[in-house]
Length: 263
Image (spheres, rainbow, N blue to C red):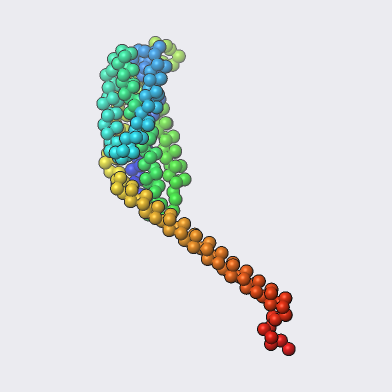
């Protein structure tokens, strides 16, 4: 793929969802072994998911008002110190719930923005080539999303191996907790930084997005008008043929087929 908006949207999907996927795959172990709050895993997950559900319409509203790119950049800049805080947050339930609530509010962005930018890329390709690439783009994006899930699973597996995790044992060494802390911080932070770089290179602005929509709307209207004219022409031709057939039928009935020149 050499289409720059498509490449940027794909890379943004990879980096954003990788940041979320690593934490998603590790959050239960993080609460249990890094924070020492094994009995509060469900409460922490409830706060995280609940705030994420609240954050989705908030992010959508902000993107509608201020545009996708500015909101995405601002959200990532807010999310970065929250992710960094996961490395230092103590095992205090109130502090953990607060940082999980903040993380959940910003957690919606990695799963919304790349897919919303997919529509921009699809419209731009349709305008430039005259063909729809929706199916191809969705297939590539879904495959990339699967890859990020594998990356998240591989990251937590590597962290547990480095930390000396012992399968089937409830009490794990402190090195496991430290390894998980670094896992939920370093790779997501790197992914978020790379996401900012990709957003900086993303060429589709709000003005370009609006012009693309207007051009596609004009093409659609012109196509509909052409179809109407074509149907009208066919209908007029059909009616003319019908009139000719009717006239000839009447002439045959009156015995004047040769206009009075028959011998």
